[in-house]
Amino acid sequence: MLRGGPLLPEFARIGDVRCPGPVTVGAVSALTTLGSPSGPGRVVAGVLARRLLGSAPVDVELVNTLAALPVTSWAPRRCLRRVVVVHELDGVADRVLPPGSVRSRALAGVDRFLAAGPAVATMLVERWAVPPDQVRVIPEFVADVGIDPEEVRSLRRRVAPDGGRPILLSCGEASARKGSDRFVDLLRSFPDGPDAPVGVWVGGTPGSLGWTELLADRAASGLGDRLVLVPSTPDARRWIEAADVVVSTAREDPYPLAVLEAASSGRPVVATDSGGVRSILRSADLEDLVVAQGDVLGLRDRVAGLLADGARSQRVGAQLRRVIGTAHSAETVGPAWWSALVEGG
Image 1 (tube, rainbow, N blue to C red):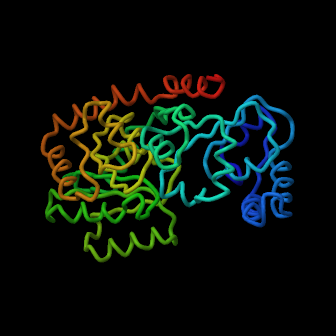
Image 2 (image 1 turned 90 degrees about the horizontal axis):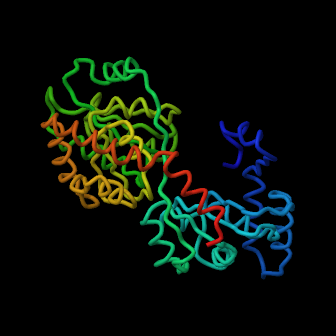
């Protein structure tokens, strides 16, 4: 977000684009914590924020994450309406926008919050004291991606060469928040043998704390080749399509996109209760595939049931694709986002 990414040229074709950079954003964030509201640190922060965002008037200012809100709030108001998209839940939200004067000032300047799912809306209203009429729940969306079937077969041969082992997959940055340690526990709960599933964890940065811990967990578990680790990749979708069951083990996940992608690919999903995953599976009448937070044995039982009953597994995948794949497409959700952005009410 701070340096620009692969969509930057597309944004640039539409209008002026500025990339603030981590140094400038860090300076603004640091300066806003200094002195009184009229202190020199905050004055300088306001000047930096204005240079960052520009001063030309706009109708709607869209802030696409809570992390950017402190910077925006210190720039002179130039918009008719400020809308903030909130993808974060308590753990991340409290880290990027800690309780205190900076949060209070930032929230006071917002006209509407777009909450990524009901769990985020509950956080804003019940724990952040945002008026309910300022919060609108908008689901996340994913695109249907065409994957070459031969790529999928190649990946399956790579992780299960004998073809006899089913593949369980989880996707996300390797970390305690995403539950990579619980994914290891889940795999260990299956007795070793020729039919024991192979686990694939997709996501993580080699050398990071979470990745190092996941490597240590794999070594301590004795799983060996039964746990394949794939660093963060731009084509995670092909891995999802190669899985027999996609599992979410997250401790905190506001609205897991990997679950939406699995549904769009027709893959069955089993999850521990976290953030928005229950509401996602409930909408497809599959809430029984969600287990209590920390219930690894319950998770194993749900996974084992799907692996033992291929016909049911296919029905679950098809049901997810039919309900979730349509309800969370850009064509369906996009107009709702647009309406929430441009309408005053």
